[in-house]
Image 1 (tube, helix red, strand yellow):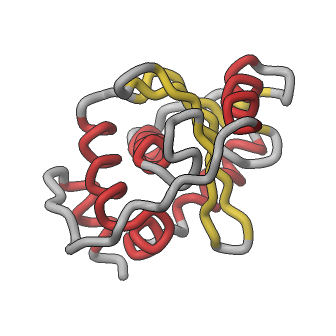
Image 2 (tube, helix red, strand yellow):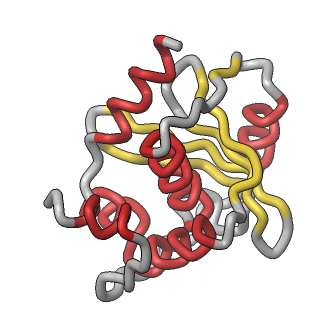
Length: 150
């Protein structure tokens, strides 16, 4: 699909530091753990080249991650509300699937996953972002090779 390949190119251009600058070291480390624990249960691309996902946390959360002009941003139904570990997990899951040659479906704005992520955010307050900390331990080869691109 044309949208998917454009989306893949956009997200593949990310550097490790982009994730940490966006979500902070703590959220990035937790996002890695969530992705490794297979907590990303549903992942799709939108026609506008963002990612939407259903992620299991304390409860089920819905997140949408965008990448525009090299800057990541996200909304989420979690208490943080944006730029959180759920978004990090979604990005990492997407990169992992693309690396494995798997297809990620492209959906329209009418998809329930998009509606749930945006509906939850509409009433969410802005929580303080996670505090940055030292670079997290990366246990999988894909993350090691990706981080070394910097």
